[in-house]
Length: 228
Image (cartoon, rainbow, N blue to C red; front, side):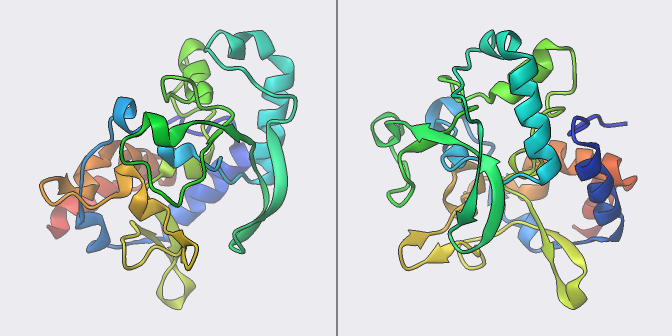
């Protein structure tokens, strides 16, 4: 059984029910991608922090309070406030990880011009995630402490026809975060960009899809393989 997001039992339980009920967006999941190279992308998907559930927010605050030395050993230098609350781009409201200023345009050659020069406070200098590094150091699943929306990226679970959940991959045409002053999120990150010479997304993102299936007791990879 996958132990991804095991630190967040409420999120995991809800996700299991969601995976059981969700359909698969086969067309979107066939879009060609390439697995990103952290040395080149600089972790730009982490530029704005990550949205959290209330349970994830509480667990992360407790982790930082109870294990500061172990987190420091990963290379993390954390501020006093690691979770902030607000309304984000008129899309959602609630908690997310805090951010700090970072010279992303100088360090990432093709950093999207509309992305602010900030990073999640858990992003390490080498673009790894401190929460993932801590999990590995503790002998846990790499995504044990990684919040759902962070671990799932660039995949998304959204409401499909008849409000039934659907696993999809937003494209330049479907990205819901495209506004006059903000030209998309998923479709502009390195791991979410269309790469015509790449491989089908469901193959590139097999680890994420396999873990989702294990959490929801479904063989999602087998289901996808049968459809192509």
